[in-house]
Length: 114
Image 1: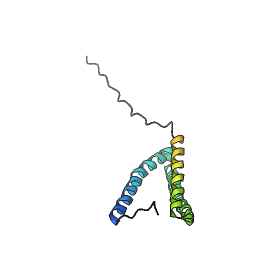
Image 2 (image 1 turned 90 degrees about the vertical axis):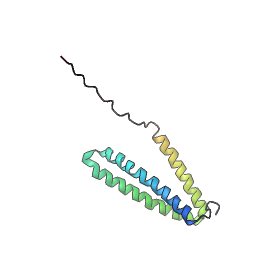
Image 3 (image 1 turned 45 degrees about the horizontal axis):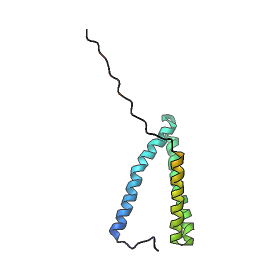
Image 4 (image 1 turned 135 degrees about the horizontal axis):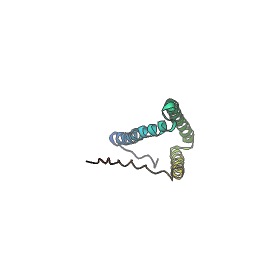
């Protein structure tokens, strides 16, 4: 119960709005990265795999959280937080060498005036 503060409807709605906005801002970027993996020939297959994994993760996450609720809500939140933190650290380690590519520098066209 210590992790669940009593708040009004407006702060709860704002919290949901912020979390939803964060998801909405990252989903198109993820879709763009995923479709770039397979190239134009396989973009449909790759996007289908992306959506399959995304919704499988939603379902599996809800199922596992529901199972953890048998231990109590505070324990379920603690387990969820620990798993998310561990996955975030694993993600940082896996993508440690990723760097943003610099945009190509424009080439100057030289014209020789005669």
